[in-house]
Amino acid sequence: MGSLRLLPCHPPCLLLLLLVASAAIAGGGVRCAPVYRADYLVDGNQLVDMQYHMGPVVSGSPTNLYLIWYGRWEPAAQAVLRDFLASLSPAAGAPFPAVSDWWGRTPRMYTDQTGANVTGTLAVAGEHSDAGYSHGASLRRLDMQSVIRSAVYAYPNPLPLDPYSGVYLVLTSPDVQVEEFCRAVCGFHYFTFASVVGVTVPYAWVGNSGTQCPGKCAYPFAAPDYGGGAGQVLRPPNGDAGVDGMVIVLGHELAELTTNPLVNAWYAGDTPTAPTEIADLCLGVYGDGGGAGGLVGNVSRAADGASYNVNGVNGRRFMVQWLWNPVRGACYGPNAAGA
Image (cartoon, rainbow, N blue to C red; front, side, top):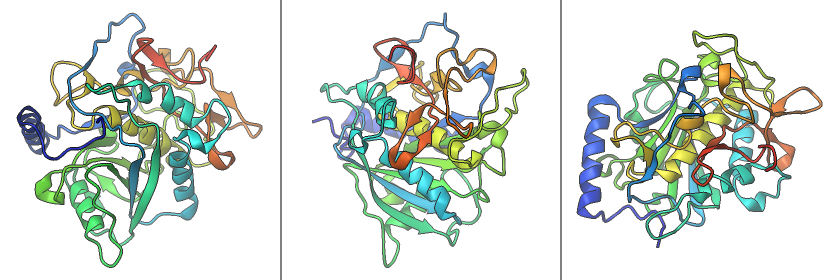
């Protein structure tokens, strides 16, 4: 019990799937990591009504991650993202505060109606390179599902079609344009339609903003493009603002995908077509004191001046956004004072 088993679907769940699917087709109702703006941040005095709506969470152990590298990728950039994903599980053994501590102390605390927690073990189980831009260099949101379909039906090396324990991640290279990328969103998560892919599985898309809009999707590693005061610009921990920005957005999307994969589990707000999820509440917060006036908060500095707040495998360091902790009722990360 508790694993994300999406098919068959009970009638209420099926009805919700149809409603949110229709909203996505009509108006783009997929859940997004918005571009950075200071006014997205939750005021410390604001009441947040994070509720459980009886849907599944991603609780399978392990949960298999399938990576689709869309476009032309440099091996060094891929290595950073692979190492981040490998750092999510406790077996990674990184020093505290680790990426696995960040995952275990917030997303892992969310449960489904059976009491099953969000998975603590995520493993890259397959990768597919789409260096030929099978759907072009300019993608609509709904094209992501066709990209996934191409990957699972590719010849001669398709990705597995894994409806019970799989999560699919479409990662686009810096030259790929995506509908509303940079203008409104940095990434999004949703679920595939059986009519397109064959089964219903959760997926996320994250784009590399290094050349298109670092000030919107790679903050705090570039000056923010919002209308307020000057934000704090930090040196990226792996030397690449676009890729280190992708780590932040990827963490954001994975946290929300696993706690709200069918848009009927954990969120605040009255409608599943526009929910506020656990990462949305803490956008731009990376340490104690973060949020107010565009401040990142208290984070660590490496000897070379790079900023980070968690440790990963292979000696890597990363910056991850704080998330809404359901017990504390506040944004929280393992680098918090007294953690």
